[in-house]
Image (tube, rainbow, N blue to C red; front, side, top):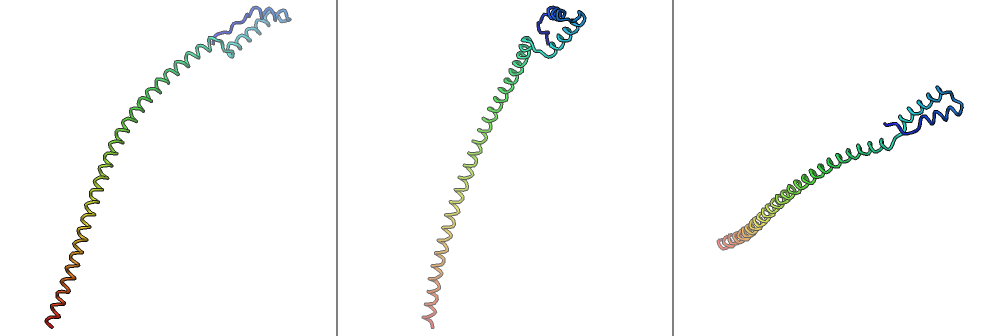
Length: 136
């Protein structure tokens, strides 16, 4: 930190006028000046700190912008992958629907065949019974 501006000679003179000896006044002003320089922040110190913070903020902003750009790109890639998966899912669903429809038609045909076989079995049965009754 830089030394804050204050008139050490004036303070030394003021202390001497108040009754301090020259050596005491100088030592007291020296100690006071050292303490001030270690604890008091000057405008120059603030401007330097502000400049450093601004530079760090600019770097962080640039990093954030880069990360945001990367995320937007990743999101676009994910959107494309999701769209492709949606198409695949739709195709699989259509395939299942088609298979289900074929199976339903096949089951219906089998049912009709069974009906036909049942009816023809019953007709055959009664025909055999009627033939047997004619012979006996």
